[in-house]
Length: 170
Image (cartoon, rainbow, N blue to C red; front, side, top):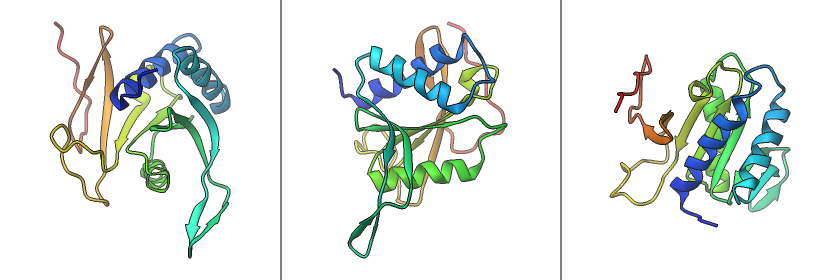
């Protein structure tokens, strides 16, 4: 099993698109999560769901009821949503979970979209390898939407965007 963080990320995106294609929007979040976990396990990914996330307060671990929707290979976090649109509070929730668990890459998957590529948000927090990624401070957040282009993944590197561009045809 390959533990390259970018290979894991690519598997998550591909699996999410694969799971979403037959039913489209309309199922419960738990149904999509169960199907995505099944698909990732078929791809030999260690997939844990509803992972307890205690907080550390004055040196004590406290179970405050936080749960990570999915943790893939203990390296990438997935937070599933079925909402009209992803809001800043959803991004803040995932970023907080990423900080608490010390995970560098997370995905917000909004299953309530016609095309899954429009429901995928990738969040990056303090990812090592400064040669490949820009340095981030603890307070910074980079949101990178993914697009599937003929089986390959391409990433739009922008911190702010108003309209998603159309991928160039090869």
